[in-house]
Image 1 (cartoon, rainbow over the protein chains, first blue to last red):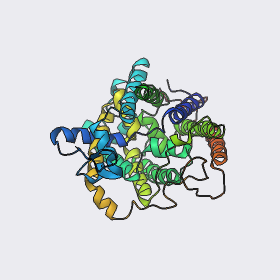
Image 2: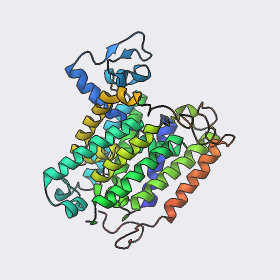
Image 3: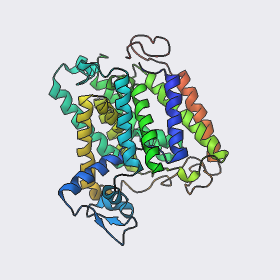
Image 4: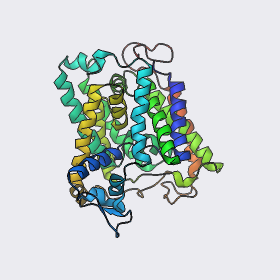
Length: 186
Length: 200
């Protein structure tokens, strides 16, 4: 069911191009921060406040939400903007594709075969690893200012210097770790 | 309103494509990172190459508004952040975009990854002031710099005097060539046709 690299590559490339042509380069990881901000704002009204001094019109006691003139603070206050809906639509598109190809096999929904081959069937072991990995990935993505989508794919397309620094970091860590952690192919 | 329709169409197509190239399957990602199955690597290189050629040709022909470009900042933390992302990427087989997409296709470990990601992003929010004080967010190599000079933008050029659009075009073609010459597999069983035998 996976497209050949030729078809898949050209189609995905056209999507990247269409995004820049029509709106702006694709990016995902910022929206994890925006979603956190929305949740935080639900339990604490003071997280995002209107501000006349801030460039965006919003400020936050959190230095990260407040940076760049309160850009993120504004998006937390008004999440129904392009970038947030883009990410929701991404999930919708993936779900649609998944349904059309008959869904993920039951035994693969919890863990991929390569995990099972190396670490066995334990569900919580896989979940603990996935949670910790998610934590490290998003901490790293926010430190870097983008993820595989924004920094690597969109960045390299635009010939950004930062994209090459980021990509070097990702593969310098990912390839040795994958080789060490997954001794068996599965 | 138009913006929201574009968000739904472009975001939806992107998510659909991530699933169709196999990027929502951690087995495929881990297979790529342990260099046993490079099919996805070929797809990604071709995608970046195709987008580069279209983008830079579009910039030269005046079809693409240079104001739509968004070159990110370069600083030491980009490299450290890349290392961290790479570590988690290899263990989970997910990155932020594919984790969300995988969760949406019904993968529970993808959903757990996203949950961990929300905590990780929250941890960055709480430690941002400290991180900034360490100086790792200070610009290097010109900050928001492109490799060549891109007309109609303020981005400084790393290689002065080189027209960025031509460089982008050449790099795009180079990525397409890399996609074509990369072997499908580097270790393990041979490749069948132009796609991996075990992919479903």
